[in-house]
Amino acid sequence: MSVEYKDYYKLLGVSRSASKEEIAKAFKKLARKHHPDLNPDNPEAETKFKEINEAYEVLKDPKKRKLYDQFGSDWEHGQNFQPPPGYENMNFSGFGGGGAGGFSGGGFSDFFETIFGGGFGGGAQGSRFSGGGFQDQFGGFNQGPRRGSDSETTISLTLEEAYKGGSKSITVQERATGPGGNPMIQSKNLNINVPAGIKDGQKIRLSGQGSPGPNDGPRGDLYLKVRIAPHSIFKVEDNNVVLDLPLAPWEAALGAKIQVPTLDGRIEMNIPAGIGSGKKLRVKGRGLGSGSRKGDQFIRIMIQVPKAEDDKMKELWNKIAETANFNPRKF
Image (cartoon, rainbow, N blue to C red):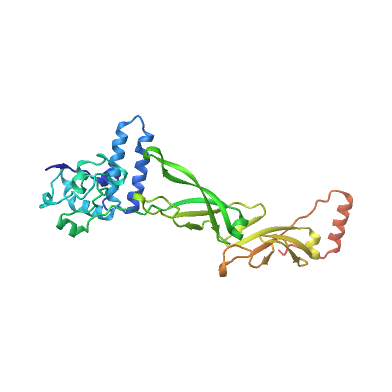
């Protein structure tokens, strides 16, 4: 028997030492490029798409990859595969007629079916090798339900939503199987609980809301990466929130009681007399984060000086300049 060797690593463009993540990344890139739906007038694209699916079906699974690597250790140096001694006595009849990885009806090459049996993992009689030595060495293969992959998307929150937390309704896009088994994207509405004090870049994990698992397996998880939208009056600095508070010169000079906005509503703040522009006052516990890492709100003083637009205003400023014994420059 002679079966043409297929280099699955070469088909995906990865090294034989590639990690599972590198293999998955290479597969996704090639699958997008050669998907038949995106190449309706290119029959070679469908052939290439089947080949990379076949390669990924083996290399993504540690047991299949180990088997492929063991039987394929010398294949790199020749064009044909010669089965190992005793191979002809192995029984592959335990495999059903369905295709592996969502393919059926000859979706895999002779090379794949010679090693893994026609219709790997789809049979009603189970999916284990029944040739003793083979099964003993590798423990057999069970192509039952598998967990779906995790997904990640970004959600935008207002600063108030991030600070207060609570229930929020969102719409996300997810992969699904459409008519005829074709992949499609559909919208899904979710009600989520936003932890109070969550910061920009943190993630919310939604168990069981990721991609569906093959063969009716459980879904993976969905991770929501938080992006806090810019605010009209507050700035975020790590766990702290900063508000620039404009003051008139006389408020800064004489002191004042000012209504100051915070993320928990307005508070009355005492402005000490003689405060300078750029100085900061702290309101404890009004920032982001939680527990011992909860931040504060800082009030940054910004003194605004009115223009001397008429003679009376100029006279008043001159009186202040003549009366006050003050030099703001110390150099």
